[in-house]
Image (cartoon, rainbow, N blue to C red):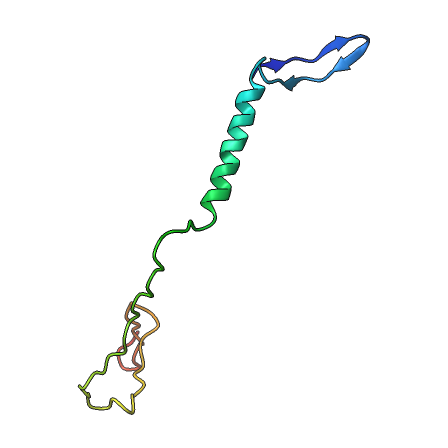
Length: 94
C-alpha cells in the first residue's frame, strides 16, 4: 500500500495516510469474504459424520497392599534448611 505524505490540496492540509492501490478493492473484498467464510464454516461442526462415542475415563484402582501405619500416619519432622546447623556446646570453648 502506498503512503501518501502530508500535502496542501485546495487550501486544505491533507494528513499523511495509507491508500489502497488502484484496482485493489476487488481483491480486498474477496479477501474479506474468504476470511469471513473461514470464520463461519470453521466455527461450527459440519453434518454428515457419525456421532462421536464418549471416550472411556480412568477407572479407580484398588491397591491391596497395606503398609505398617497405613491408617495412622506419623508426622515426621523435616528440616527447613538444606545445610547443617551446628550449635556450640558449652564445653567446647566456642
